[in-house]
Amino acid sequence: MSSSAQRIKIAVQKSGRLTDHSFDLLERCGLKLRKSKDHLFCYGENMPIDLLLVRDDDIPGLVSDDVCDLGIVGLNVVEEKRLARLAEGHETLFDKVYDLDFGHCRLSLAAPDDCEYRGLESLKDARIATSYVNFLRDYLTKNGISADIEYFSGAVEIAPKLGKADFICDLVSTGGTLAANGLREVEVLMHSEAVIVQTRAPLSDDKQDLVDRMLQRLDGVLQARGSKYVMLHAPRSALGEIHALLPGSEAPTVVPLDGAGDKVAVHAVCRENVFWETLENLKAAGASSLLVLPVEKMLA
Ligand code: PRT
Ligand code: ZN
Image 1 (cartoon, helix red, strand yellow):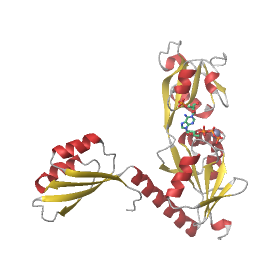
Image 2 (cartoon, rainbow, N blue to C red):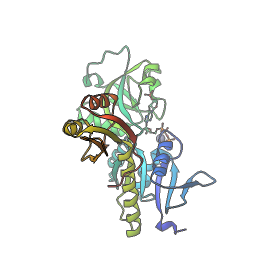
Image 3 (cartoon, rainbow, N blue to C red):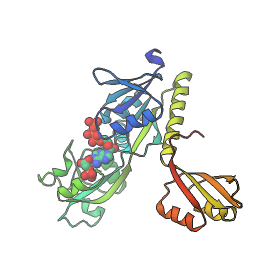
Image 4 (spheres, rainbow, N blue to C red):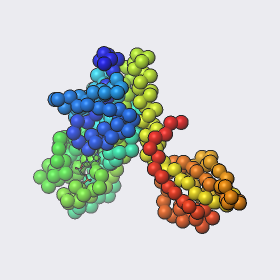
């Protein structure tokens, strides 16, 4: 096995909403993983890449301090930590390299159902409970609002009921938790999803090559995930219309069909989802024998 200095370390959430998706993504990139007995590490068995399993809040710091080369974490956590370090006079030393298209949520302000909300003015001198103190402070400052920010580390949504706050600022995905607590979303401060961040510390050539290879595979997995392979038959005269109907496709492959006169087979990679409506429109344009297949891997 290569020495630990030559191995890439990726910080991944140990146990939470991002964990399964993060493992799935890395395994799709071809990484075979074995967990350590204490469940703090995962060793790459077929590549010199190891995972450090930690709380998501620790990931930006581990990457910024160059303990890990890469990290997978929600943009909401990245931004909160970036602003916290900035407030202490430190720059963050990492760059966001990819949006990963999972862990989607919003950081929102919510008000009690019986509160008459009249826009940002209503927040003036109000008490707002949140664990996103730095992000909220930055947002309020940018909007010229002065309010009291109350730090809550968990269960923020119960703060108004306890009489501890007038509003809350927290993550929302379906909105079910807000509704169950008699709250409604009134402002969206940020749309978030999981992202991959890379340290700004210079890497050795070998490590940089490996990081580049991993990121290229990641790009392939993400592109494949949003793509479909479409196969159909069509009269050559309908090709213009059919190409225009195929969502996000570049140059389709057109192959003559043996003994079928003017008919050709068309194969195309569509970079978007292909809905039933699209298939119906393709059929109306003269296409037949339509097949839509998932794409597993892509390498440009
Ligand atoms: O232990 P550790 O510190 O690692 O985990 P954690 O408890 O801090 O984080 P975790 O696992 O709850 O979330 C990890 C990341 O998932 C977050 O930082 C976000 O980037 C992302 N994410 C996506 C969410 C949600 N969706 C989400 N819905 N994080 C939290 N929630 C909360 C929300 O605040 C609400 O309380 O889930 C609850 C249900 O949401 P609704 O709107 O669907 O009811
Ligand atoms: Zn956390």
